[in-house]
Amino acid sequence: MSMKNRVLLQKSGRDQFGNRGSSEFIRCELSEEQKLIDEKLKEEHKKLNDLFVKTYNEEWLKLFEGFNKKGAWEKLCPYGKPSLSAFYASVRGHKSFSQFLTYWLVVNKREAMEMICVTEEGIKSELSKYNKCGRYYVTYGSGRMFGTNGI
Image (cartoon, rainbow, N blue to C red):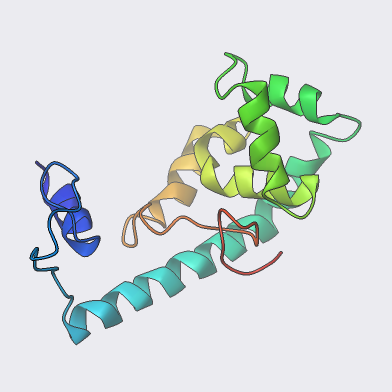
């Protein structure tokens, strides 16, 4: 089991198989230092996401002008995964369809940048900014499923 998986399981109080365990299971508590580091990384990631949205969101949303939800699903999910009903359920988790599209942009950065024709060097440069804080803290938007702040 990788170190990252082990840490994530311990943080959630689960054993190596993902089970919650018995009530006697001692939950791993983070030190104050680690909590501060986690908060710092979350803030850094949020700032990077905000900058990413400011940079690419307008061009991204132009790709979907005139599209209904099914048309957007066909463009975003060319292989039918997730299913149309799962896609609709994800959309309902946001205040508006444009907010959902912005969430999709943030979560699927590489694919979105490819769709708006960013060069490979530009994609690598943009994604390298996230190396320090990693993808663990990816959240964006105010939908009930994805919760940070609104757009």
